[in-house]
Amino acid sequence: MSGPVVRFAPSPTGRIHIGNARTALFNYLVAARAGGRFILRFDDTDLERSTREFADGIEIDLAWLGVAPHLVVRQSDRVALYEAAAERLKQMGLLYPAYETQAELDRRRKLKQARGLPPVYDRAALALSADERAQLEAEGRKPHWRFRLDHRVIEWQDGVRGACRIDCASLSDPVLVREDGSFLYTLPSVVDDIELGITDVIRGEDHVTNTAVQIQIAEALAGAGKAPRFAHHNLLVDASGAGLSKRSGALSIASLRESGVEALAVAAVAVLTGSSDEVHAVSSLVELAQMFDLAHVSRNAAKFDPADLRTLTQRTLLKLDFESVRERLAAHDIVGAHAEAFWLAVRGNLDQFLDVCDWWRVVDGEIIAVVEDADFCRTAAGLLPPDPWDEKTWSLWTQAVKAATGRKGRELFHPLRLALTGRETGPELAKLLPLIGRAKSLARLGA
Ligand code: GLU
Image 1 (cartoon, rainbow, N blue to C red):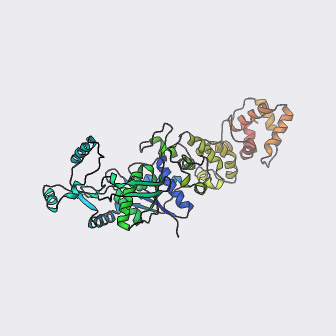
Image 2 (image 1 turned 180 degrees about the horizontal axis):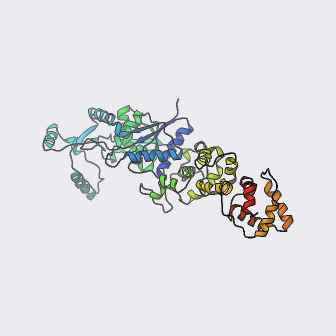
Image 3 (image 1 turned 135 degrees about the vertical axis):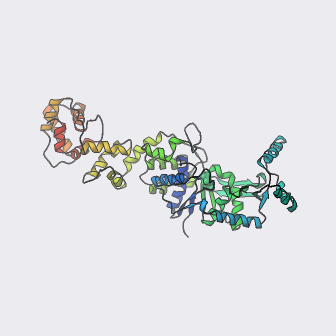
């Protein structure tokens, strides 16, 4: 048996935000954990609103998060499959033409509501005779096409919500094909899920209401029991409880990336918020995959505070070993024999990764040294031990300075830090000093 086959199916009508990343990562982690396959499917049948730029941008966003699809498909390339499926449904008598205009449908819905009846489509089109249909078409009306629902209760075992049921008698027959022959979301989604062998549909709970219809269509096309499993997760909401929309600009993956938030911090917040696992920093998606379990996802709203992304970024950086950042450092010319020791020295003092550039300048470049007490610094410079230096050098040196000057505590250390780094605070000097080296230390101390 091979592992699960899952898909993330964004419509490329905008870039993705952290709430969409939640869905993408849930799918990705389920596949990663069990040796399955993750398919990226662009639901781009809405030709007016979908663009290639958005689709490409979404791929970039996912790549940044570390989510690499095994396969990318676009619904706009697959229309022939949907047409064939629609044809089969027509032949089975399950897809029927309806001629009502939107205005007619609205009027009938209002009448029903006024009488206190549920606003369900009355299937008037199903009662039309062939002659009546021919006449409507002769008047120039074009049909849209509705799926004839079986009025039974559909039940499924939801991977997050447990036992679910929807009585299809309470639903309108869904429109699958528009007047102009284009497809709404429902049929292409089911056709692709079958055709791509999707075993598990993991998506936001805003899609629960589509599920019974999709199960019926899947069973009509592929046979009883052939629908995939479904899991509907809670949605991320911001601290005020408001949902995220495509317009939630600041929480788009692209803007989080640009603002210096770490991808793994986004992933940890996206995945662990609203679950029984505490939100905490992780050092890889593999680590996240090992602990991730759909069964831990809560049914309550997943409330998160965007400010947590900052703290989690700091904690994530602290967890990253040199190998996982080697290339990123090299991209900023942080290379060479000291690169690893440098990373281990500074990773706990970064608000964002780019701060490495400032610290690299401290150890490898020029800074403006701050010498507040010139005599003291000159004395200290005279006591610097000879090369070679290592992590013990700092303590040997400061003991000597203490003995010579009688200073201790902040009075002893602070002027040295200021002179050597130009800053009030920073990484442990025991680690920085050997990286700065003797020549630079002498110069910065004003010797
Ligand atoms: N394109 C749909 C969406 O973005 C996909 C829903 C699904 O996963 O079935 O909401």
